[in-house]
Image (cartoon, rainbow, N blue to C red):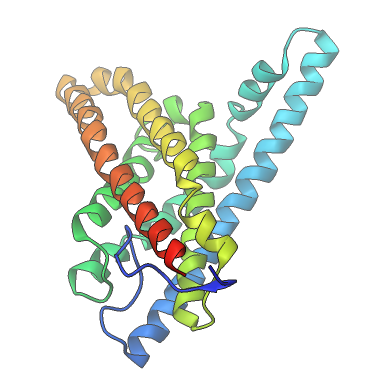
Length: 251
C-alpha cells in the first residue's frame, strides 16, 4: 500500500465520510472531526500527565515505606482520584459533543451504521452522564483505576479515529501508519475500554441498591446487554480490518 492510502469502501463504525460529496458537508465534517480530535487529544494529554504524576508519587511513597511493588503502586496512583477531579467535567462535555454522530448517521450526513453508532454513544453517555457524574456515583468512580484506564482507551481510540477522518476528508489521503493504527489498535483498546466501563457499572450497583433496588436491577440488565453489544461492535471492526487487509493486498 502506498504512503497515502484511501479509506475502505465499506463503512466502519462512526464513519464520518459524507454520504454524497458536497462542499458544505465536507467542510462541516472536516471541522467537526478536527475539533473532536483536538478535544480528545486534551483528554489523552491530561489523563497521561495526571495519571503518570500520581503513579510516580505512589511509587515514591511505596519505595520510602518499602511496601508496594510496581503494580500496586500503579493501582494506588490511578486510584488517587486526581484523574477524576481533573477530567470528569471536561470528558463529559467532549463525549456529549460526540452525540452528534447519531444525528449525522440518522440524517444520512455520513455512511455510518446507525445501530453501531447508537450503541457506542449510548454506552458512553451512560458512563459520563450517570455512572461517573458527580450527582450519581462519584464514590465508586472517583477512586477506581478503571476510570483512568477507560479514559485512556477512549481518548487514544478517538484521537486516531477522528484524525483518520480528517486525513480522508481533507483530500490529502490517509497515511499508511494511520490506517494501521485505525484498524489494529482497537484489538487492545476496545477490550480495555469495555472492561473498564463494565467494572465501573458493576462497582456502582451496591450504591444503586441503597437508593432503589430497581435501579440496581437496571444496572445488572445493562451489564448483560454489554456482552452482545460489545460482540457486535468488536465483530464489526474485525470485519472492517479484514476488508482493509484484502484491499491492501490488491494495491
